[in-house]
Image (cartoon, rainbow, N blue to C red):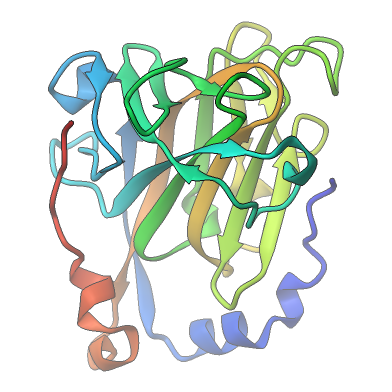
Length: 237
């Protein structure tokens, strides 16, 4: 499925959001999802998690795990499934079932069905700051060979853009896949969330660089205090 970028420039919600001057870019931060950066060692971290960023502060995003997505619905960003749990290892973040069992990676087509990790930002971020890294990745000879990840990008206004190993995800020749959204989408577009899904073998979520948006003076009422401040809680199984 190719990235759908042509609609972006005509998205009235995105254009009015940017034109209103309601948000300014903050400073870039990186979240490393490996257990060594999250403080409690390898293990299951529960149903959802607010990770730490590279400064040691709580990141302005939440992680949630989903499992048992059905294979025939694997290209649907809104595919139904079950809540999973997050497993963090030195290699990155993966998914287990709701009883903290099964594979520790983001897996596809195993006993737990297709799995994904969803990252939801406290407030929408600009695409020019977004750089995603996937670990334990090997595309093999292409689709239906080894790893077949998909990344869904949820835009402000309700549109979704998808990327895969043929469109956007770049293999470094070793064991990592990179997705530079700043080079693939209009930098003025705002992103509310990202889902990283594996449809065949297994991968792990390694890191995400992003730039949090800061409300302009007088715009808190527009954005909502809840979205700006966010709840800074962290749950561990």
